[in-house]
Amino acid sequence: MNQNKLERLERIQTINFELMDAYRSGLSWMVDYCEKNNLPYPDLNRAYYLIHVSGMMLEQPNFNNHSEHPKKTQNLIPSK
Image (cartoon, rainbow, N blue to C red; front, side, top):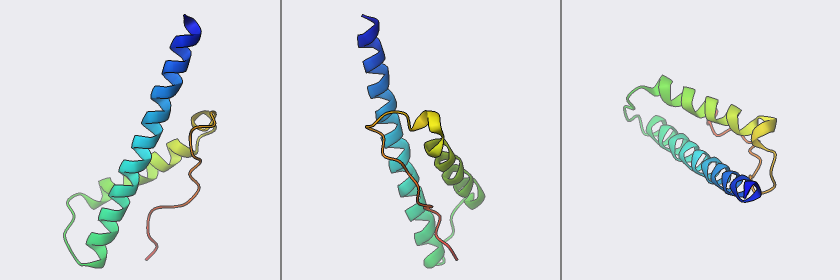
């Protein structure tokens, strides 16, 4: 029974990684689009902070310990 719980926990963790990466990518794209088109973006500093923190979390060794999780090495914040 413990093995089943561990497998379920690993699957949930994998889904969380995928969701975090998807939201991070979407937020990065939205910020980049707003900057390129001179559109106001409320709380831009907070958006950059979330992109940065989620990237750090995805790159931590304990987050990359199972094979289903894709390793994220690229910086999604566009350079100016």
